[in-house]
Length: 65
Image (cartoon, rainbow, N blue to C red; front, side):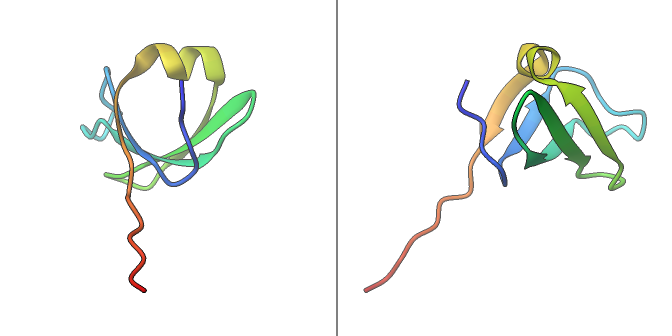
């Protein structure tokens, strides 16, 4: 699964605050995710995070010349 730093991922389960959108802060053997609702940061193993990701939203950077 191609998850990059800066992506917004939609998870299958909600965070206790009620939001299911998370911003990716770190990628490796563990993912560091920040809840877009309350700002809480969590570390989760890569296998568990990839299993629970429903959708990846990537910010496209357009350059004008």
